[in-house]
Image 1 (cartoon, helix red, strand yellow):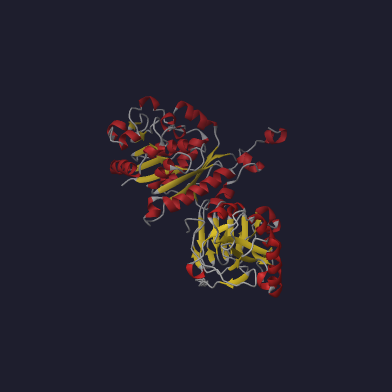
Image 2: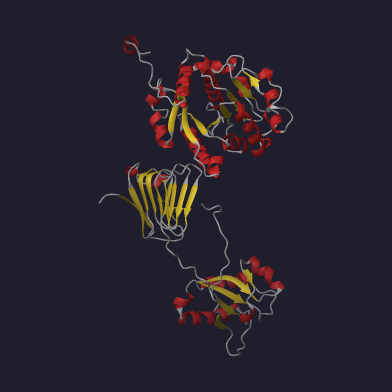
Length: 241
Length: 269
């Protein structure tokens, strides 16, 4: 049973850093547009950190910078190398102020272009999902109780009461009534499904797509059924062969 | 060792104290030495229902704090042999009930009593948690309506996870369902949940169905447990409940409405 609904973990990601050498946004935009044309797939909705260490412009317009980048289908996430004067306006414009790691902190010297791209490779620890054996619960879950099956399917031989909640990263099977909430594919598994002997659920959800009790087909009330995700739509089908 | 039975519900006003008084009295009538402990610190009612409010000198919290001993504090019922009441404090709050304090008092009571009935306050906070924590058995008092059933379900979840038996991995608390304020006519009309509906949702063993009855209100107001009113339907239903608590099979009464006579059926009524 999980005590907290959230968890914090440190993680490293590879981000592209845009080094700005001029505060002339029009010029920068033109150069950027050319770059993007060369690799549209790579840049489409790409998160971007902007290094402003070379801009000796305390009055630089960060809001305009953000608007410009957004108009090019980029996602500006933060800035680095900002002076203390620049940090205030940058935060006001919605930028996170990041500090680069020492190895990547060199501003490249190149005179003939105004901007330059650099891929900063940072080792990233990727959690490889491991399929664990199904968790089997042989009890009723009463109002107010919650159970989370991490990285596995969840089988409940019993009833999930109104006000109770079952969550699984895989599928959920309930050999009893589902009167509370069932949340399957909690870590983003589209193929997760919810099976129940008697569907009277308050809420069913698969990978964030959910139905409240009002949206569940009334003809299935207290009948067995399977809830699955088809594209971005939930489906409810009979448990018959 | 005494059997410790908590009378609980989650929801307020469903008849916990009335049931505690009736069940405690019924057990004493059967010859078992019984004490009813009022855990509703700050809102004590048990002494009123039992008609002993003018004899309260010390209370539960005094005993916990060592300001009085059990002999001084327990109130002996004058009607039924072997029946005692441990009243709650009206001037304190529920935080005065500590786990250690409650354990100490229950241990001491266990030495001399056969049954300890813990009358729980409403809610799921400190007072209610302390009342159920040491229980061997639970009588979950439920009215035939959805919010009461939902709250009973919640309390059953707490019994299964936060009682001493659950925490220590012992045999779980034995759960009994006591349905009160049952009105067969209103069930037939469909504006009240039926026995079957409630049993299906809560999925625990039924121990009694107490009909909605004028006798209960009357009994409360005169300070006499309704079980002593043997002619009343509620009194008889509580007597049946005691039999079932003793492990005897008793057929259920008062589950269907009064049979209407021919004239009533013809002319309405």
